[in-house]
Every structure is written in C-alpha cells, then in structure tokens.
Amino acid sequence: MQLPLPPHLDEDAVIGAIDPVKDVDGVTTVNMGRLLRGEPCPWPNTPAGILEILHRSGYPPAGRHVVICGRSNIVGKSLAAILMQKNDRANATVTVCHTGTRDLAGFTRQADILIAAMGSAGAITADMVKPGAIIIDVGNNWIEDPSRKSGRRLVGDVDFEGVKKVAAAITPVPGGVGPLTIAMLLANTLMLAEQQTGYTSP
Amino acid sequence: MQLPLPPHLDEDAVIGAIDPVKDVDGVTTVNMGRLLRGEPCPWPNTPAGILEILHRSGYPPAGRHVVICGRSNIVGKSLAAILMQKNDRANATVTVCHTGTRDLAGFTRQADILIAAMGSAGAITADMVKPGAIIIDVGNNWIEDPSRKSGRRLVGDVDFEGVKKVAAAITPVPGGVGPLTIAMLLANTLMLAEQQTGYTSP
Image (cartoon, rainbow over all chains, first blue to last red; front, side, top):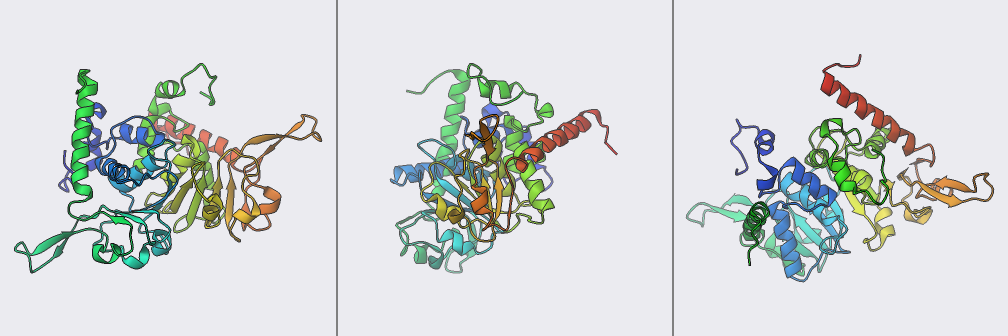
C-alpha cells in the first residue's frame, strides 16, 4: 500500500486492513502503540532512516534537544515517540512544533538537532537555526523551475544554501533522508519476513 | 487490573491480555496506537484528567508551550501524544523532558503549562518556573512526617509553597489530579459500556 491514497478511499480503513506482522511501514495502530510504549516493532521508515543518519554520522540524539517541525503520523509523531524513549539509541529531549506553534523560530533556534518535516518549501531559514546545529530535512516539495526540462525541481523544507553556512551538518533534498527511508522499508521487510519464517539472514 | 503489579508478573503480558474494547485505562497497545495517531479511543486516565482541569479552569493548551517532565506510558508519553494532536482541545507545542534531559530548569522555565510527572518529591522549585505559569502536579510521593499519626505524608513533585507564589495556578497533592484520574476512569467505563451495549446515558 502506497500513501497518499486516492481521495475516494478511507486511509484509516485501508491501514486497518494491514496485518501488523506484515506492516513493513510500521503504520498500523498496534505497531504505533508499541512505538509509543517503547516496545519492539517495525519503525515507520522515515523516522528509522533519520535515526540511522544521526547515529552513523556521529550525532546520537541522547541528551540533545531535538526539535521536530511537523506532526504527521509517519514522521513527526512517530519520530517523537521513538526519540523520547529511555534507551541508548534515543533518550533525547523532544519538542514537537506545528502549525499551531507560536514563535516557531524561538523553538527551532534552541534545537541541537532540527527535523524539518512540515511540507513547506524553504520554510527553515538560516536565522531560525542555532550555529552548529544538525539539520535533517524531510521536506519533499516540488517547486517551479523553468531552467529544468521538467519545469520543476524537488526541494526540502530547509533553505539549504543559507542554512548550510550555519549548521554543523545538513541533509540535502534530494539524496538525504529519502534513500534512507527506502532502505529502512527493505530492512523492515527483511525483519518481518525473518520473524515469520524463523529464518535469520547470515 | 491495578498497576503496579507484583514483581513476578509480566506487566506487558498482563496488559496484552486486556480486551481493547474493555480497556478503561487506555493502556493497551492498540489504544495507545490510536492515541498517537489521534484517533478516538479511551484516554489514559491521568492525561484525561489533566485535560479536564486545564479546560475547566480556563487554560486551554492550544498554542501554549506545555513542558512535560516524565515519560511514563500512562502519563508523560500519553499526555504528549494527546496534546500534540491537531484539534481544538489540544494543539499545544509539547516538550518532553526526563532523566536524560540536560539543563532541566532551562526547559521548565519556558513552560506556559508545566506538567510534573517525574515521581520525585518537591523536584520542581520556584526558580524553575516562569512567573504566571500553570502548574499541574502529578507526583504521588510519600515522605516521612513525624508530626502525622501515620508517620508519613503525601506530597507531589512540586514544592507547592514555593511555586504557588510564582505560578498563576497550581494543583495541590493530594486533591488535585488524583480525583480527576478516578473520575476519568469512570467516564471511560461508561463510554466503553455504551459502545458495547449501544445504550446512551441521558
């Protein structure tokens, strides 16, 4: 199943039809409950990819202030649930901001790790970032670009050129979180297949 | 089922044996998944009581910065999941702090609404509170008190006498969140009974 669905289909009903033991996206109710409770489960792919990026790049979130902009089920809320857990891979202080947040910049400027997942092209600008912060751009926005043959260009939620001068590290769009999201989908598929078959990959 | 369980019993296994349609505490995996996804479900009682207190006292959380100290399943994490949803009763900017948080006071001093749910007697002191903040004390700690016949006294996580001089409003312990928690348990019981029987109370 690939989101978003055509508008005539009920997303909750379709997600509810997925068997949790085959839920490679980690989006079913029971798996999101395990996520919030801190129990083993397939993680939603984008948050899982973000955790991989942070750990493999030498920025473990433990003890850091992670500010998440956006509260979708598969990114913002799931990532918050993962990062606030008490374990070595997580244990961050987490703030979730969204369209109802007053003074967004006042929050983003406090972030040791800033997650931009609001779906708004270039919404995070350099003045909203603390010098030395780690920036993860989850945005996936098509903007018009007459210089391209297609007439459009993929950009993130972060003003990359401006913010890269302030941040210690920043993920690009495209080529940042996206490929990791796909890799995590495959990792979940393998994990759940192994759980069902009892076979463990070497 | 009453938590905490005796140590020889597996809490997750016992919770897993509760039918979600009879889950008056809102603690089963499927109901916590609905909570995180923002779907209708029985809310855990203490967060539900906190929402009642805030709304009935004229302090709706929408647009405010709620800082939650503590990340238990039935208080901190559940309350965070409720408050970050996009609806009129919630829509707060939420920060979750815990034992892994560096500079806890730096976060608590930013709170418009401060939720103390860490289980540490008198841990929140006046210097950790922004003047005019709303303080919800979820603590439930017994401390020695030779002046009492029982030799002990129930106190919260907030230094009530000190903090009440700074806060705009503050809940006491006992007599604050506790009675609301019990009322919400009964409200959930009624709601789930009505859902099963089809009968609606007048």
